[in-house]
Length: 350
Image 1 (tube, rainbow, N blue to C red):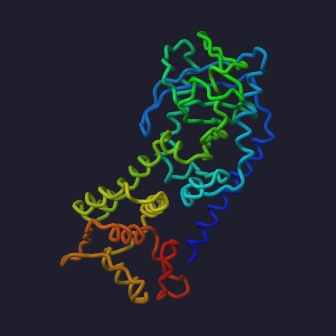
Image 2: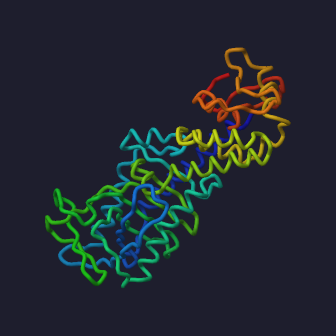
Image 3: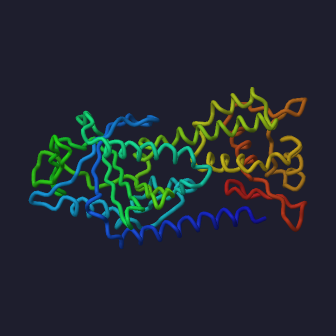
């Protein structure tokens, strides 16, 4: 029964690696000549991003690059605890000092990585086309890119705020002046404010992407996160149909309930289907019967099947929960005692 230990170890390794990245960022010598500031407009939860405007940072009375770099890095001083953002997204939502980490190189996060790379690519396009005509009057996303270690590592600090270039509430953190020739600098002025809070950070280290999340809701809206997970869950259901574990009618019913699932449930399900463990099952009904032989009555599974032994989803949240837990590596047979079956998902202690 090593599945749970492997999951815990994987999560621990992720957090340990992320902690080392934080230390690396804190000690980094950022290349001032490559610091860029981007603004763009994005419709909440949209899958695509409009063109961004890239600004080269200049100095007036204030060292703009130094000021902006300190503003970004000051966010990291608020980190008290790192958690796996998918397994423990609630902590990130409820606690200002708890940050979430997602390894974008993990196969189950491929769709999310693809989405965030679109955001990075928009900034690259803006930088390569400085004369691109972009309307920033309704801009609601600000991005600062910091580069270090011979330009192989990039940190993208992303904030979602309607105050990008809008009337200031205060000017404690300076104010932007953006010129018509892609130049911007910070002035002591009350007309425009710089929001000092960044919602999430995309870290690109030699082509490998890691995500650090400070504010979960703005991240979800900007990264199309729920939609990315929903897509992968529905893709997984289609694979279960192809593998003849469920039929297409029940798949359609399950699809209609995906949005009601939690972040962690979706992640477990995506990972479990991807492992193809279910291919060793002769049928879902038989696997449930095997599991129930070693479970006390109060913990037995009660997924429903028709006279032909086909799975039937009745559309209730209880039925959905049963199905998701069962498919998501919930049932594990002891390596030393095949008669001992246990739910290790964390939802139900069998």
